[in-house]
Amino acid sequence: MRRWRLLPVLAAAWTTSAFAQPPVDAAPAPAPVPFRVGEVLTYKASFGGIPAGSARMEVAGIDTVRGRAAYHLVFAIDGGIPFFRVHDRYESWIDVVTLASLRHVQQISEGRYKRHTVYEIFPERAQYQRNDDAPAPSVSRPLDDASFIYAVRAEALRPGETKRDDRYFRPDRNPVILTGLRFDTIKVDAGTFPTVVVRPTIRAKGLFSEGGEAQVWFSDDAARIPVQVRTKFAKFRLTLSLKSVVYGNDTR
Image (cartoon, rainbow, N blue to C red; front, side):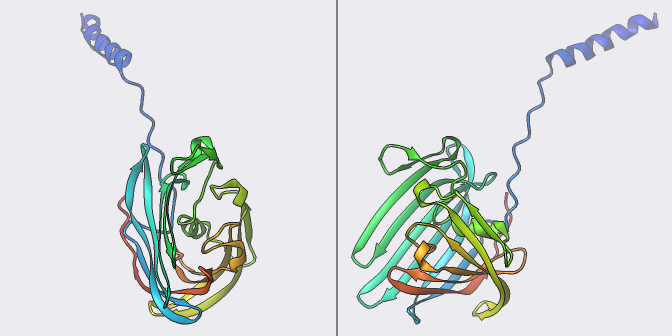
């Protein structure tokens, strides 16, 4: 009689097994990064050695772009000298898993020059689209102007190291070259920081153009904050010095 009592149990087990759903793959984990959502870095800006403005770098949040979770990054600079004012804003959305650029927006106002450009970037098919133009070839792990400095932070370059890669989203502007130059300790309004000085170069106009001779002082710690930036920009020698830091919270 006991063997008959086992039948309902075995039948229930078979039914559960037969109709059980296959396990769902876990979502890919976000890539490790040295920054957090809510991080805000503010800077004093000087043009040609003359204090004349401010700048801000911000991890504004996590948005969704074409179904992908993406960090929303903002870089804005306001300043200049009499008769030549700069009000630029660069925004980027980068995939939290791959750190590839998905969208890039430029709002440029430099003197009389004005421009508003939206780039939709498609890493999965290595293409980008400028405004309403036809799609153009890109690269598989693209970076844009605003996301570039965050990518350099993630690389954690050391003095004596050089990294060269074709990651800029416009292929004709590659390669991207990162060169670790030296250790340095600098004092700014936000405090005194041991740093690693890196030279980033892209064959494109902007903060890290090939002829700009840019140097970035990254804090030599886990956050790798850009403490100071020196480069040629909008016809002037630009220096950004860290004024304050809000580290943000990890809300992923």
